[in-house]
Image (tube, rainbow, N blue to C red; front, top):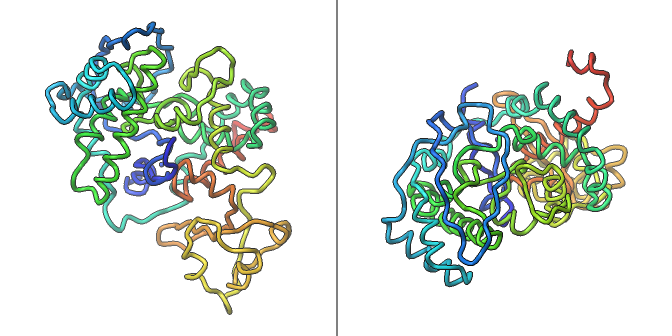
Amino acid sequence: MHFASLLFPLTLLVFSLPVVAQTPPGPASEPAAAAQPQAAEQQAPAPAAKASNATPSRPRPAAAARRAPARGTPYAGREDAMQFADEIAQKRGLDRDWVRAAIGEAQNLAVVSRLMQPPPAGTPKNWRVYRSRFIDPIRTAAGVKFWRANRATLERAEKEFGVPAEIIVGIIGVESIYGQQMGDFRVIDALATLSFDFPASHPRAAERVQFFRGELEHFLAWHSKAGTSPLRPRGSYAGAMGMPQFMPSSQARWAVDYDGDQRIDLAGSPADVIGSVANYFKGYGWNPGMPTHYPVRFDTARLDLEGLLVPDILPTFSVASFQAKGAILEGPALDHKGPLALVELQNGADPPQYVAGTENFYVITRYNWSSYYAMAVIELGQEVKEALGRPPAARATQ
């Protein structure tokens, strides 16, 4: 994916809705978009001089709220869009007419621009509320089913990449409920809208526009090389795709053919998904055998909380310097060899919770730049792992 650290829109929306990274985004989380009529499927232009392959089928999202909006205005008549198409074609050595036809078929979706707006200033964060949206019986049961069906592949990936099965399972569960909710926006519509009609009022609009134009370029280059239609893939309002919700640049960089069928399918092949997520984490520096975090408490008499929080989630402190600022570690944490970060999880009006995050905790935030997201991934994966050992009757009462 790319730049791995934007706090992606869903993460922001969870904190602003009443009842989830990277700068710019990594694999995006699935947005809770407003219900809209599903867009009609269109016939895509085939890349010149390439054989067309059938696009694999995938489960449709269960919730009506994830359906794509009605048709928008095509970009065929936009001079800026066609100029960008020419630039992509020249830069990548792609067929100019094919790129123009693909971008010309993309549609401007107003709902995508609206969903990209940041939440209101001062929106309180609440870890307990956030956690409840991802660690629940439905997601846990789906995770148990996914783990059992793919146990051998998860074990192989853990051995080859060093990433624990529960972390891989946690990511896929948080991102798409194991393929149940992968988004229903046409990816090319989402990426084109965010490339040419990103909300100008956004405080980082210029940076985001460049990011999404890069994603649109990766997306078209991928389909030109594969000989597949760029008009068919569906995903989130930010253009994230498949069970792991990879952005196109992440797909190009980290996705792997882990089932050996000579193609990469992040929507229909659990093996490809497992291998690609593990490869992503390995690429961002996952340390095999290292915990993601440790418990921490404070010596209030000498606590320098402000100093501990200055680096945010970036591991900066040695065990000795961490404790010198009033953070107390115990047990295995005292033998930790790498740097640590004090991770703060706010709980609205209630006191925050804290953990000592390791380099592996930070690696998870390369998927989505949010400590809340990382903890949800960790705790969902652990909950699924524990549920695997419980009898069905016991799981049903959880």
